[in-house]
Image (cartoon, rainbow, N blue to C red):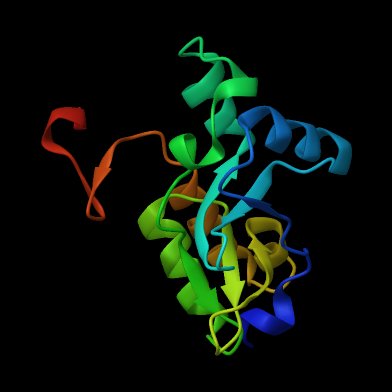
Length: 152
């Protein structure tokens, strides 16, 4: 099974020049918590989540109307291709501890969004449990390994 056949969400995009307030309003109105950021040339340059807004804007006391999405987005975006096997997407989610991936066409243009819940629809139960455990672990990881200072 490939990523393109499993993804179920459209990819919502804002330009780099958008403000955190613009992105937050789009998330609120669309009832989603993930938005992609594109350059003026149409290149996907980053992603922004509702958690990013809370931690990187609100918790720092920044004015959302004056903060560009480019200054608080996660970059580069973690992505896979439509033709990639879902196992590759699972590996990326575990390595980066993320719940959503941007799915790209072969030419690099955005095709959609693949979420952990999309994978839950097709993964065997034990594989899904392993994936959820890895993605949602609350320990700091450095290149896929637990950092020495976070070990019990």
